[in-house]
Length: 485
Image 1 (cartoon, rainbow, N blue to C red):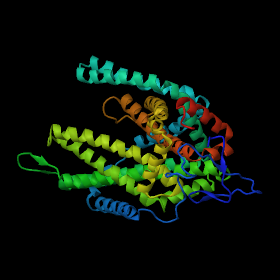
Image 2: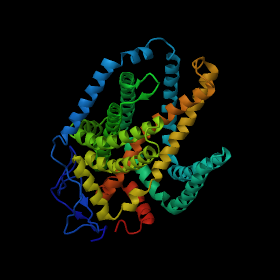
Image 3: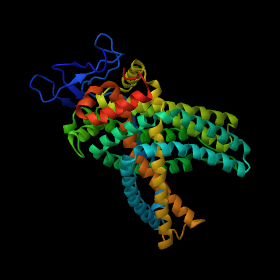
Image 4: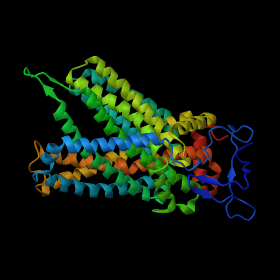
C-alpha cells in the first residue's frame, strides 16, 4: 500500500503519555489515520510506540540519585566549611556577580534575536554554519603551523579536508535539515514554557556545581597527602566517586529537560489544542519527566556518568604523571565511548518522553524503528547541531562585547588578574554561549522528537499541520529518495 492510501483506524485513541486524542468516529471532529509504510507487515510492525501503563520505571536508579545528592550534601557540610567560608567571606566576588547578571540579561535578549533570525532565514543559517565549521578547522591548521606545532597543524589540515568533503556531500541535504529545524522551532514556539524549564535547569545545574565544588574541596584537603620529601598522592577512589556524582547529577538535569521537551512536542504533534506556553501539554510532560519517567532518565544518565568519571580520572592521572601514555589512550577511548552512549541516549529519551517506556525498551524501540524505515543515514546527519552551535557562538561573542563595555564603563573588573579586557570578554562570552546553548537545547531536543514522530505518525502531522508536513515530505524525499515510500 502506498503512502497516499491511508488506513483509517476507528475507535482507537492515540495517546501521547497522558494526553489522549479523541478516537475518530462518524461524528467526530477529528479524523485519525495511520499511513502504512513499506516496513509494515500485515498491518503492524515492531518498533511503533504505544502508550505505556502509568507507573514508575527503573525506580532503583532514581533512588541512587537521591542517595548521591544526600551524600554530597553530607560531605559538603562535614568537610567543606573552610571552602564555603573562603568563597562567601569578603565582597571581592560581588562585582563579578553584577557583571554576570548584566551579561545574562543581554544574553537572553541576544538569544531571542537569533531565534527570530533562525525562524526567518533558516536555510541561510544552516549553510553558514556548515561553512563556519570548515573555516574553524582551517583556522586551527593555520594557527598551529604559525605557532610551530607541526603535528597539530597536520591534524588540522586533515580535519579541514574531511570538513570540505563532508560539506560537499551533505550540501544537497540542507533543505531537509532546514525543514526539520523549522518544524522543531515552531513546536518550541507553541510550547514556549519549555524555555523556562531550560533556564530553571541551568540555575539548578549552577547551584549543584557550587555545592559539589565545596564538597570536592573538602575531600581534596582531607585526602591529598604529602610526605616529608614533598611526594604527594591522590586517593583515586574518592576522586572517582566525586566525578561520578558530578556527572551523574548533571546528566540527569540535562536529560530531564530533553524528556520534558519530547513530551511537549509530542502533544503539539497529536493534540494541538493542548499546546501553549503553560498549557497542559507542557505541564504534564514536565510532571512525567520528574515522576514516572525519572528512574529511566537516571538509568541512562548513570551509564554516561560512569564513563565520563573514568575519562576524567584518566585525565587527572595523566596530569599527575601517574600513568603516562596509557592514561592518554584510556582518556581518548572513554571519550569516544561516552559520545556514543550520549548519542544513543538522545534518541532513547525521545521514546521515554513520548510513550513512557523504560530506558532499555525505549532504546530498543528507537533502533528498531529506524532499521525498519531504513533511516540510519538520516539520524547520522548533524547539520542542525552545527547551526545551533554557530548561534551560540554568535550570542557568546555579543555577550563578550557587553563584558568589554562593562570593563570600559565600570570598575567591576578592577581587581581582575592580568588583562582585564580579556577577563571581561571571556566572562561575557562564557555566560552568553552557555545560556544560549541551554535555551537552544530545547530546539535540538525538538528536532530529534520531530524525526521520530515523522517516522511514526506522518498522517497526524499532515492532518494538523499540512503546510509544515508538505514541506518536510518534499525535502525529505529529495534528500533521501525512497525513504517515504
